[in-house]
Image (cartoon, rainbow, N blue to C red; front, top):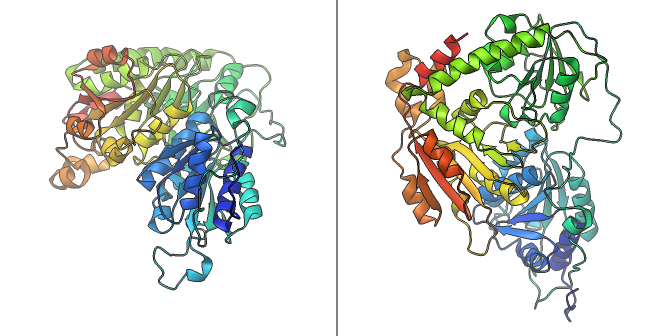
Length: 552
């Protein structure tokens, strides 16, 4: 324990100390801080907590980056993470990360420093009404200056719920102590008390009071859809019942013999038309064929509540379940055999196209998928890279403890680099990778602005650079009838040098020509953060997508 200071503790420091102690008691191991004046008490206390080994502190100059770094830490470590900001626009800059955490059910604790309530509406500097800044979907606490009991209760409540919580803490002058050190308890860190961040996942939705699983009958031609964060229960149900498993890359279920690699394409075939029942798990967002399947009125749809508390039911046709159902026995293998045989044939055709010159983006995705060895981490960006990965990833063997995550709650491209850095910091992995497009990388380039004393992971970021937005070429916006406007408002071309950007931030940079070179580069483990650029072109992306869909 530090030596106590002589002068009486002011209100701001007392609340900040109680906040740090509350975070430690709640099992929080990591806190992200963006600097500011009104949050000074929290900054000083968290710095000492980091020095004492009580918490691990990460400092960023950009609040949006800080929010997504905290999100990544929570995803990689499967435990709540706190992010601290000063007042005003600083809090609002967390909104994208908070929205993602809301729709993905990630426990993010926002400690927003504020002026006393009496200053609201007076024009005082950096003062706005920060209460419920993130809307009604996010739990919110507004605490008066000096409310130590309130901050302790709010943190305990936030750490125990799924999704984000805003704790708006009003700080009155004085904001700092007269001297250091502070009377902050050290004790054991949460990791020492209950395992480290890469230990058994702390799944917020596994409740002791969860209702018993419903038993469903065999018979109908059934498929399991595993969306983002579905977890292994989807695979286990598919294996027990003998049903095809249609698993997205970030589902945590894309392994085992029941997983169908080319499911997205096969849904357009006779097999897709013959589906009679779907069990939906996780949060599927990746493909229109899956959305159309789970919205069909002629199919029985059972949707299991995801970690965000929502049942995916875009067509409003599903019966909602709280937990994954159970079956007794298994259906005859004919249905699964058909899917597996078609998948083998179609996978060979997809690989043939990938090996052609026009298939270069698919080969990059295949090299990334192959590099995800057991115990590895992969954070994948939204838009085209995750779709390439989806069609090129051969299902892995069960038990490898691979963690593949993405920001699929709202499927935005923002904050992906920060999310990857946070996830890599939170999880001890045999290899940490990220895969994203150039616009996604540039959208969060501030993530590479890291102070010299800040923790850095060993992380390789693969950037598929086609100098613009490729995904729109595969959608309605890419139709030839809209070609005169397409390139500027959808293609959004740029001439940014990724190599120069990396040089400006002191980030190691490499460039590869093709998937073979990328595979070799990924075998070399980095020290710190490394960016590998894989240049390609958007020319022919629409035709490539059409060729894949035409295979069925």
